[in-house]
Length: 169
Image 1 (tube, helix red, strand yellow):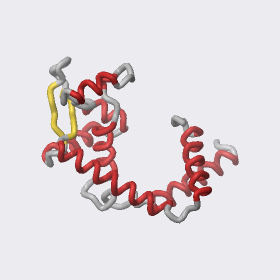
Image 2: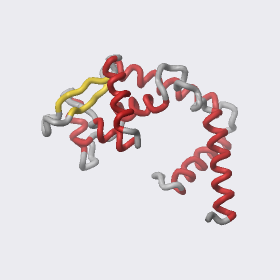
Image 3: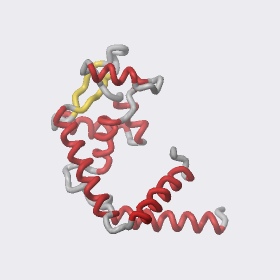
Image 4: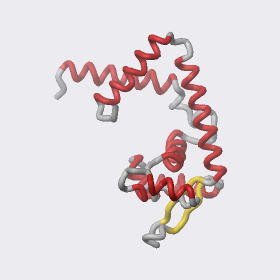
């Protein structure tokens, strides 16, 4: 059973989550007035910016070389589903939709022909850029009325919350 301090933190966190999801529109059917749901937008983001299995050493060198030669194939679908904690069948539906819309392309993994690798097409990259611009505009409107001191406080509070909950600094 939770003690009173933990109950209070749970209640306050849930209260904040309700406030924040309403404030930034996460309960709307689509994200930033686009055709994408939040999950679809996150999949696009990860395909465009996420870690790639080829860069296993974390250096990014192989990713840079792959991009230089237009071979950046992106993360495998199964890896992406695990990373985002999305059901594999739901991820498959999202990727089929993206493929049908010309947003992603698949390639056979040259190291394991049983695997397919994914990457955003030019159209997918354009959609991702538009989604990011819209999200930036929305967040800018959210913090626009804050003074410089309050912006510094908010940034520190967000970083601290992430640290306390197990995220990176």
